Image (cartoon, rainbow, N blue to C red; front, side, top):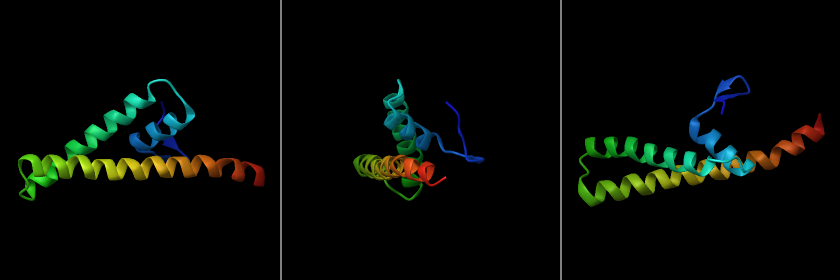
Length: 89
């Protein structure tokens, strides 16, 4: 798995989403790992903002889910656009 994309550093969650739509083995595990890692990072910020217990857990999980949904939708959109770009060249 490479994190280089068009000369720019690609985020692991974006690569995991692209791999998922390409049907690569282990891509679901990568998606889950990025989801959990992101929830962990969000929980640190939530804790620093004064959230605790169930509220902290809910905010972390749902925020991570929102970001992961966006990443998946963007990867799907990008995948659908690639053939149009290739045909235009």
